[in-house]
Length: 70
Image 1 (cartoon, rainbow, N blue to C red):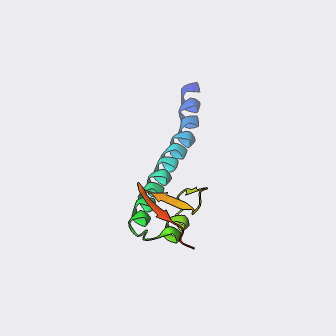
Image 2 (cartoon, helix red, strand yellow):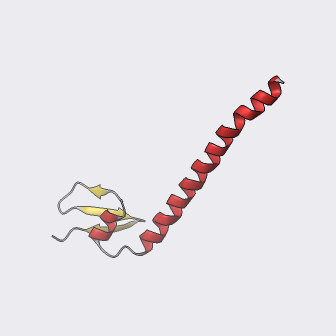
Image 3 (cartoon, helix red, strand yellow):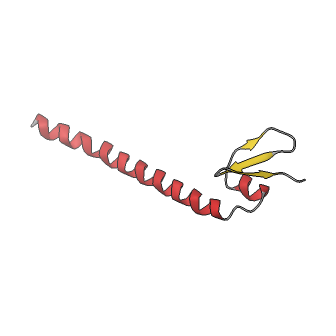
């Protein structure tokens, strides 16, 4: 009987791990799709890539650097 309780207790954790892995994979794929559409500094910032605190500001996406021209 104790084995049944232990097995039941693992299911919520297993399901949670599967959900988290699925969400992480979806996020990675969606970022890669968005990265293909990046054409300028503003697009880079909108997709959530890091902005360097430099003058002028620079945003880096997939090894490409976009400079804020404003």
